Length: 350
Image (tube, rainbow, N blue to C red; front, side, top):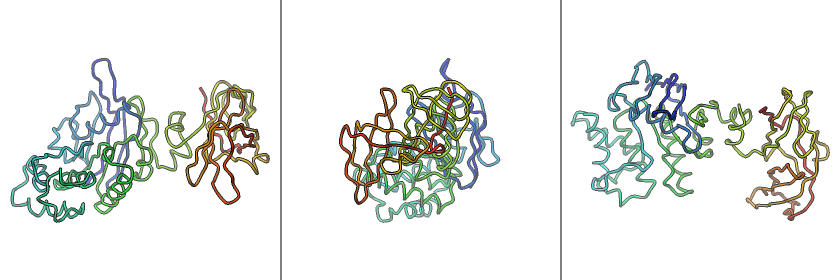
């Protein structure tokens, strides 16, 4: 096993920069998730690690080896593709063996490596089946087995769950995480699904516009977003636009005076609020920031009601009301007390 280190990685196509000065480190056995919207540069970064994209500048080290300019088959990195890339005319065993062929592994090692890899992903007894005879989750596990059979230092996963239905996604992501922990295999996964990232990662790296906006644990990114993009991308947050006036005071575009725990420079900015940090109904009037909101939208989500409240002509909030005994569904147009503490508001300038 080995760690991964990327320093100042950039990739340009003519005048278009798709990855800009990306630096990150994955410790031996760590599970890192690159998260961001489509076109943010995360897949290009992953393919640069794999060797399918040559960087314009920067370096990539696997353990103590500089692999920046090495071809894919010399990097000891194994990539599981989004569409699995299984050969339909080959059996499970033949598909797994293909990776060994590419790595020029001695033929005598094939049986044990294939058997071990299939056992790891719980596919024993399916050796002679073809991809068309497997479920989506089983095909995904064949693709992972093919990657594991070559005994890589780094496992790379490119949107590995995107082709699975919602229930199967939950099951397979647990299987991948448990397997990765059991093997202690350094892993980098790309996804645009924040729930996948939150449930699978040791650390997350949020990217946008080809740059890293923030890297850290799930708790760090959710509770202390570095900027407005991260605050809006991780979890659900409402943004109240306005201007800071010093002394921890903010005035919204709709005229609300908001007290913040964080002092900000005078000037335009926004206060972001997590839906679950806003108090609705009883108790709201005792909060440091207390207002009245009109219900514009209600969605029943089982354990909670998700609502959009309009505070005035310019300011709205998405809030969560726990669904518990004695709580009735808010009606459209209903006026509801709403409030939050100074600490709940995340302040951002600009």
